[in-house]
Amino acid sequence: MRAVSNLTRHRIMAVLRFEPATITQIAQRVGLAKGSSSYHVRLLERAGLVKVVRTRKVRGVTERYYAMAARSIELPDPGPGQPDVLLRNAVADLEESPAEGERHVRMAHLRLTDEQFAELGERLQALADEYRALSDPSLPDTSLVFALFRPAQRRQAEEDGE
Image 1 (cartoon, helix red, strand yellow):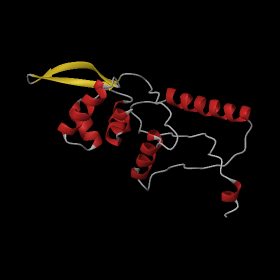
Image 2 (spheres, helix red, strand yellow; image 1 turned 90 degrees about the vertical axis):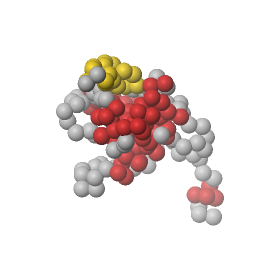
Image 3 (cartoon, helix red, strand yellow; image 1 turned 90 degrees about the horizontal axis):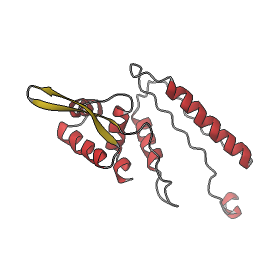
Image 4 (tube, helix red, strand yellow; image 1 turned 45 degrees about the vertical axis):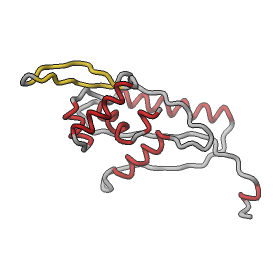
């Protein structure tokens, strides 16, 4: 969990999501020094999240290409009162995205039965999977983040503003 909780490592994994890259390429894309990039990639490699997928010799030096070890990562649910690392990293990415770029951010408060809740979750997952299948590494990166949850129950006094 610690390996993915760091925003820099989150961004390195985003670089490796669609195609392999060298430490130098990762450093350039994330905006890091090569040494920092190497440090973070080694941590991700030790955690089993990235792996070397090919090597080549360049002027006597072995260049390693890294890629994600799996297509997706399942993170454990944060405990009660613990931060949701995935959402925090997504918000950080959103805040750093170009202000002039197109974005779609929406929050909706719903009242759903358990069946409707489950169906909506399945439909959101299916839609994300459908568009993931259409992804082409030559196209610009796009992030899709959604959170479907039932908020903590508040006491009636809090709801009434007392």
